[in-house]
Image 1 (cartoon, one colour):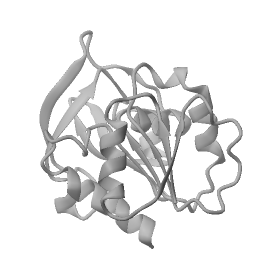
Image 2: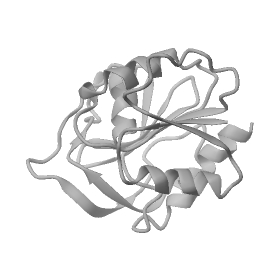
Image 3: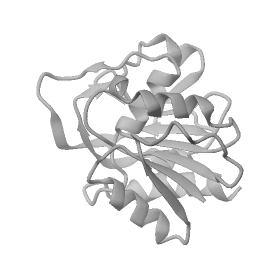
Amino acid sequence: MILFIDHFDSFSNNLIGWFESKGLSFQKITCDKLLSINNFDDIKAVIFSPGPGHPSQYIESLSLYKRIPYHIPFLGVCLGHQLLLMAEGGVISQINKKPMHGRQIQVKPSNFSKYFKNSELHGRFVLYNSLGCKISDPIFSKNMVALASENSFVIATEHCLYPRIGIQFHPESFASPAGSKVLNTFLRLIKC
């Protein structure tokens, strides 16, 4: 079963729908009900959804992230990506004064990945964010790898040792034609 943490975002159901179409079962829990989660015996993966606001507003999600056993694959999308980076010690800051919602970008990987084949992170994706983590953040020389960046902000990352992936863009959106490649990569981690 996949534990899906919903940060009250309209894209959550799109993500769940994509994974359910692959025959996976979900337990969806909203981010305000996480303190009681301590048993991960039946959990094959954890996904943190997109959501509004700054990751520092999601204390329960940050706490849950730190309780996830290291061997369990983790995927953070948009806010979930920011929560991953913040929990690992990164600083999340404002990218632009105005939100950059619905902006398509061309992604090209800049570093080797343990999980993604080069072509799987290459393509057009859509961003819905105004916050991010700069590629100059010290965590990218310690425990995280910046897989791709745009305008000095990291848009794809993975942990150096554990199966933990973060993507700032929305692979589940119709405006991300290459999104299925990214989600299929995570699917491979789950089925291992």
